Length: 355
Ligand code: SF4
Image 1 (cartoon, rainbow, N blue to C red):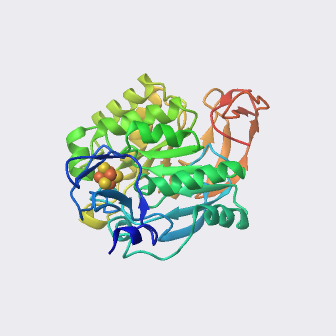
Image 2 (image 1 turned 90 degrees about the vertical axis):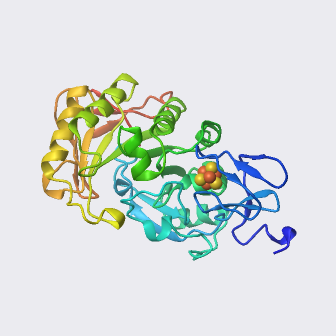
């Protein structure tokens, strides 16, 4: 392929790269910092060195589009009960043994090209579907960074919110740039042990913790998911350490979603997470002072309702992804970027973006 024809058809000049000797390039978008020789693709399989230039191969070609309830992301404190236009392109910078979307996350974007949508068209589609927000989800949004960046900028201008559902494995500089346009994120904190992180995902723990702080400190509404996998991330001691770190680092008001694992992909030999492990995790988190703790993927447990941390009244009743009742009053405080809500019964501030 000639160099001048390489741009287009999903190939787009990639940001966050450094030129090395000859035609070698280092990608500095995520902490892997892949060094790519001419013709090589990074760990995420979406960024390629072509003739000494770095290209993103996933710009404008989502492989998955859907309109979902926002609770599915999960985001429970950000416009509850609303619908969100959701897109993904192929590729991921993690190779999780338990990946639920491996058929698209571990594929090449060229093999998964299904739609052809410019950033402008994505925002128009979201408006056509009458959703007030767009989610970058299913695979890893970091690896289609240039695409989400352009979408988020256009969306901001049209009053459409943008949300990233991510593993949090991104370098600080690109993340800070993105924080200017992004409204909310749910970050998957896989476990609290660096060696398990490495074996389970191929990434490291510390950059994910750094991402949590950067999002929180830069005006992006944040929720955290921790999938509890038997034999990998179910140790009460590890969950204690995770919750203690969250409490000690200013995340007591950040919703924490413990999620049930189901056997999948390369961990299909394991059993689903026992209910007791999730209940124990919730106890540990509440004891550490985390105010909003949820249990997902076990409908009978009713672990998805929101209660007031002060008076204990149930404020949001959920049935799966359905919001059946919402007793949170939106605060009229315009200065507060998150428009905190108030408990209808005692007036306690409930963190989130409610209206
Ligand atoms: S975004 Fe992809 S190419 Fe860039 S450093 Fe991360 S894994 Fe490597």
